[in-house]
Length: 240
Image (cartoon, rainbow, N blue to C red; front, side):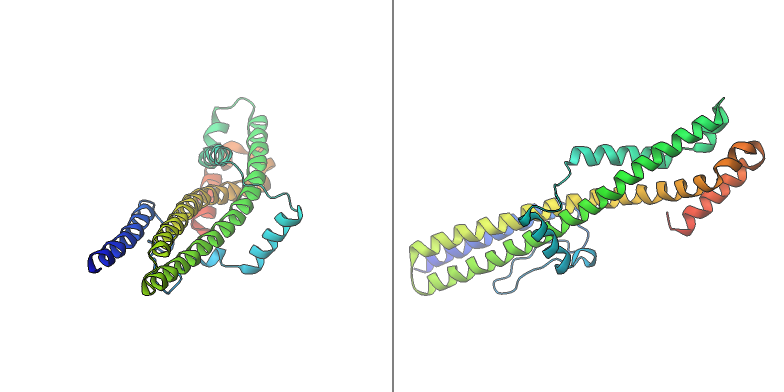
């Protein structure tokens, strides 16, 4: 009996350790690991997403068919991230120096930037909603894991071998569920952070250049160095 008990406990521990190892392969903003305790649920501690009211609204909208909430495919988000980074990193002064039609060059840049920032704003909202749902899914998986562990110890206490085996499988399943959702959460958080970083830079550049647009075109040679300095100061003030 002692050997059987040890084997069962080892199986449960191995299942938890495997799930933890999978989770640890991904860099995480917030808690670094998922720890599965017997009686204590492990919940995420990310302030920005901890809003049960918003989560309830999102789930209600999905249930009644309102809001038309669809998760944006990562391929589209990565393409948007690439374009946002490209525009944010564009040296517009150098582009204007090399251009024979400065007005068209600046207008084209501003038009593209307006389109991309509009897409970026909506995508960041969509990502925040997706992360809210993933956070909820993680917590649900962990709660089910705790319940499965309780069933294991209850079955063990009553020498119910069939229920012991079932509860071990359930525990492993929910541990993997939480780990998979955590990996998705970490990946989407990293994508969101990078998109938000370049979105903020591009938004500030767009705001500044839109205000100075006519002045830049009319007196480009006289003010181009001032424009560079003012743009840099604007980004520094916003820690970008």
